Image (cartoon, rainbow, N blue to C red; front, side, top):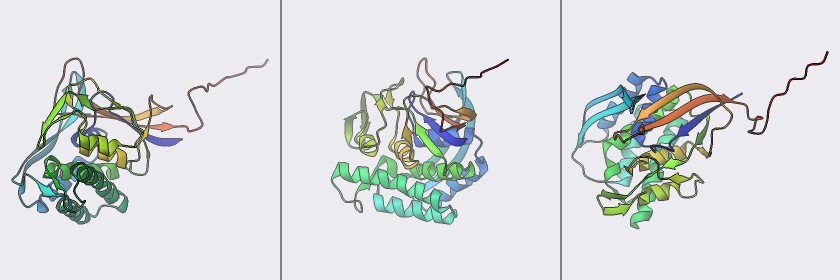
Length: 270
């Protein structure tokens, strides 16, 4: 039997805080994750964290965990190289394993490379806006610590279709169609299918998409043969009608020799 992880974002998309919350819901050490997030402010000098917590709540009647992150950050933008240096230093201070640190930095690299291509700037000089604040560091560092704590970084990951939302997005560069340019660049060539989902607005964020790709997720259109072991629900920050705003992560055991056409037959002779 092989341990596998399914990230199910076909309804409400995936963001950094939703993925992190789903891992806490799965049983990752909450105190260890929170301590690692507080460590981030040592490397983002303009930022101050007021409170970090994970709250057990419900979304449209389904139990889930939500990330509470109250902070201030006076820097409205930072160079991508500055953000990379800060998060790399924070990873070193936490003594993350090489695999966990690679996950953090590869995820961040995907974001910076996407932004540099969009803006026609070099990797070293491109300026990040919304994703330059300390909450990006919190999502990346916290998720890496949680994945390591759950011993999942060596497991095989699968991803359903990704819900990206619909309509127009307004951010630092004005209005753009949803999905935004960064999402398209990050998921370009991933073979993962983008779908609208069941909620309005932006459902998938650059941080969520980049972490999904960095986990080496293989796209699936339906669940593979799996014996569920643990289910984690990470709640998002918006609520819709008739649908829970939840990212579901399932850990289970799968027999790679099984396929959808196989069946077990017992023969009884007397």
